[in-house]
Image (tube, rainbow, N blue to C red):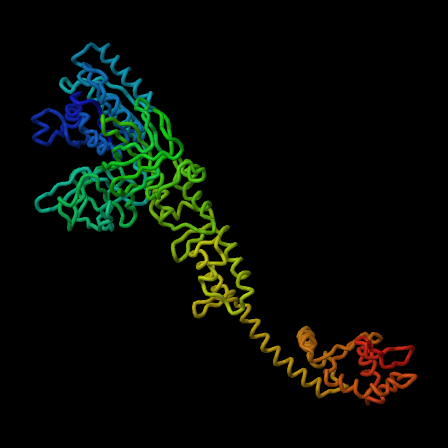
Length: 627
């Protein structure tokens, strides 16, 4: 295992000497540091320790204690699993001691070990008092005290115990989480003869391999890895939580700077606005909205303006949802911690976590966005992704945006929505299945009144509650299912196509049936003989609907005949003169006049009765008198 421990504390309290005693390594490598006797840059050392979980390599980052180098201190604190607070027994708690504790708390340090340095210069009781004071200040800030050890780098007092305490504290911290993508904030840039440009940093978020496609952020500039090292050992893959040296191709040291970061290509987004969860330092002055601050995130520092979304002033020690407008684009993953410092007088005033790393400017005091951001502030990536899918509904949400809000790689985001059924279409837009199905169900209903179909943009306009990508995916699914047809940029119901073909077929069959009826005259074939079953009834209905035939019922025999209208008109012309003569015609007489049997004459006369052409009295019929 490997763990990073940041060493914090007031200037000249003996941090570097303590690192030397713990590791045998010198972290003050610059001439100015050696001449002045204070650290002005990050120093790095390590030692091996046996723990219950096996051998652990503890990476120590020696951070400058002077207030002028807080930016350097914060950049070194990026990714640390635990912190070692060094307080000199002969000086006690100092301003930078407290500010470093504030920063450690704001950065979410899990475990704190307290080392009382120079303990050989004071009575044991004084060292114990200083340790108690340091522990009290740390606990006030919510930090967990793993151990407190009195030490002396000169005499070696407590060094072995401190080494064990650091190993134990590191063992109680979790390894750097694997979010599926590498994130390496750069804290050093230099050139090595024969190797070219080298950058170093503490790897975060996920493994990094020599074969990975990576980019430099902000800017998303593609770069290539020549090699990776951890403590001088060349590796093909390095893990989160390790101190990493990356040898880069095709880029000069002058093109890089501390504050930049390496990550997977196109994964991070350059943005001016960040939506954040903000915690004010208890000892800081009130923080008003629109305040100008320095944002320290990763190893970067940029001027920003605070925009409080739910109030005008953030009191000391309180929490708020806010936005930061940066003076230049930044590229920071979601859930990354940051520090805010007041430029003048210089002091740490707040910190927090990034909620939305690619935000737009939001309206203040808007309940919906405020509630959503507040829910995301403390949520795990899986909960954020599920909530965003529910919020998106039928509009859907791009997988890249889900990954961005969850602070994970796209593949990891797709894994985190299970077991909830989610559709991910060809445009990489995700939508809950429960939101997708109503879109697919609505499309046929919308197209039903348009048998010729609709252009796709017209279809989308009729479904304004659904996202264009979701509509396209639903259309594609319906085409695969045989429900829709697509041609010339339009889509139409496949059932309409089938109905068209069936109507054409039935029209031809109906014309054939009509011709048979016409030829049959007043002795037509029965409907069952013409076309049996449901198809025959459907064809008869078409002929009656179109006025080609009439339906003549025989109530006694409980049957009906179809007569062509031409035959009925012929019968009416023949019978009219006879029906005017009293006493009227019997069925047998009407049949004789028309030359048809009772089988055909009864249904025909009953039809003529119903249309008011004849009037029946007893067994005889007369021509009806019409007004």
